[in-house]
Image (tube, rainbow, N blue to C red; front, side, top):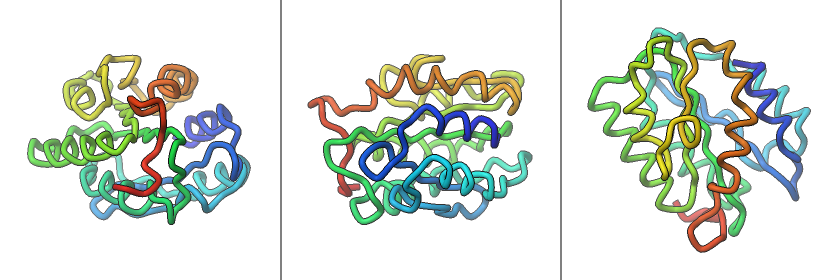
Length: 186
């Protein structure tokens, strides 16, 4: 997963005036790893991402709470979000599909993020494609596989899709009025 995240960061001009990156880890207890204003360059973002300890891939994690945490603590003006700048939330899920109640909570939180202009792009690591429908429900419109949600068979396949995510979603990430982020109105 580290290679994917590093490659993903390399697609952007990370700076206080350019792209800002934050991270939320989700497991049984999601945690805000760093906000949009914590790191001002790609090197420090990549270093911080390498320090994140991934949770066990046998757990589905509490994605709904993680999305709520992202909205309330990461995509805010106090945490470095800027009005008029597109916001993109890329979610990398583990192989296990959450139970129905967790799926519904995650879909509701994703809809709240989308309602304030945050473009949600889930990426599922799923050898058998079992949770494509869940990923579709999490994603922003137009809800199309390999455009606004992605699946890969293994974690090591993530590095092959980072450019697709960037190219297909950075334009889509702007709000309908052509603006961008909420500037903290989650």
